[in-house]
Image (cartoon, rainbow, N blue to C red):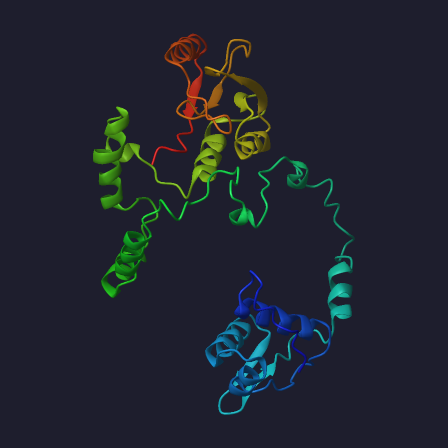
Length: 301
């Protein structure tokens, strides 16, 4: 059994390194189907790590089909896996029945060619990381969050949040949003006017699916949120650049728009707050053209 040397100073956890090393050895043919792995205690002693770490890796690889666990016998390399990496590559490259699929021509959009948010994986090592959308551990209420998480994993709570509520959100969360958060922004709504999404991307995606189609003119801030632009572009909307100056997004040269996605509180990445004069002008333009304004209040919380 060949296991690569584990790097204790690496940012990758020991458990992740061990898991990756075993999978690599299986794919490389260094471990063959049916071969017995070292007992967790012995492997842990050889590597100088905790036995629980080895056991956790073995159990995960059993769940993923790489290993088989036999009672009172130990762990074995799964017999349903290809014997070597060469066989894996051949199967992956083999043409499908009926001919190969033209994957370049089938999708209506090539996501790999779009502009996305790019940031270094070690951004936390920088004294001044110029990124956004990440949690600051010095400001985030970690202890309170940990307590809430523990309560949410209690037996009674699990029965609540695992129920199938396909058409409704958590009523307690909705009530807090309706009575505590939205009124601070001058927004007063009914419960059925609130929809909780998994995040900004899903919210914009749902709006794009509902409101955008081929030829829909959508104003997007430049510079701005690239994923918002990509989502509306996927619906074949016509993207209209909205330049950002010292007063915020400028719609004056955009012409009639069907939709406009704006960040008036703090524009990202310039952090400009839209002036009251510019807001009045945007409202007037939207009323005149029937433009639906979508506010991305990403710092609202």
